[in-house]
Length: 480
Image (cartoon, rainbow, N blue to C red; front, top):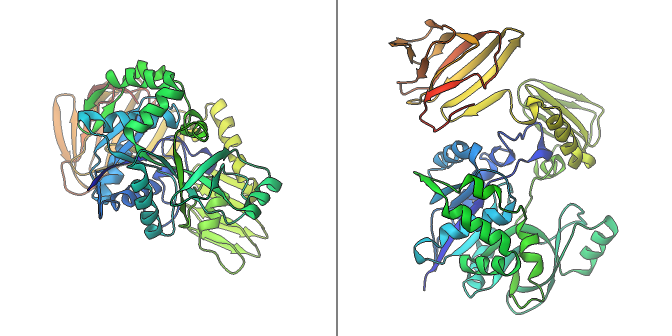
């Protein structure tokens, strides 16, 4: 008998503790931090491989942020993967509402598959071990149990929640969920055995999740159903009602349901996962999985490290030299540099909080900003000018737009540009340029088969990205 499985990738989250590489507009799950693909791509590929034996796995459902929708599609396209759907949260409401959206989608048409739910921001060293553990979890979940994957601990970690289990035939019985312990308690857990790290991976039937949620958090269930009933669909994108979703209480899967299950009559089991798991939750974790020299130093990018030990250097745009630093993290990006005690890398989120309070752009975006049509890199700026390097994907087009406060000069570096200015359409090739007067309707399109690159020089009294009036847009945007 085949078991219908619906993989679910939870791709929300902002990854604040990996600033300045991770930003709200391009968070850690879309970054390449280990291996050659992003963490999101690794999660999707891992779930794609589940469909074997008696398991019939559907294409993955992805739950993510509205602002990241084209990042999700682009990265799946690089894998050659098509999602079953991309469920877009108009606002962050933590993982319980996100999982509920996935369950409601999976239950459409009368189906009731086993949901295999994994975060999009983790890495595993042993993919085969993951597949074996998931196959066992799916078999148990198909019988109506809730199954959670527990990570075999290899150190007294204080940054993770723990699962206390009891030995039983087959999957372990979950006896208790334990909050992040202090160092002494974590050491005791490791010595006693029977404790595992909670990795946030869940396997359960869609109907089992909805029944458990309605039992313990009927408010979340009812509000999520209302948002689902008000949904709209645009090709692969499914958008719950914006106002209705804003009314959904924010809560995690653990607090809403999982921690209430032990002793309640709801069967909840745990399958061990010993696969070199890491959630890359902070720079300390990135250092742990990185290749190191004989002094324990890890370097990414153009870095020279001298007389240092246990130090992580991550350079993205220029040479970084480090001398005489022990157990330190140095992360360089074009617009921000982080230097931190490696053991205190969890506190990076305090920097991010201060940036947010000050409304600084480094909180949200990189200097290089990705858009559905390509990207732009702000290479220089002054009181009345800004210079950008722009790349437009083959066949892609920016919106038909105008600006109230700035004029623009475009110089083609490579590729072919189709430029609409007012009622005229012209073609520009390498080394050719044009001028867009203030207040003139215009559009940029790449009609070719190669990427279009150009330099844009803006001049005017106000150069903010919100000075865009859109008349037509391929990507459904109205501002920004």
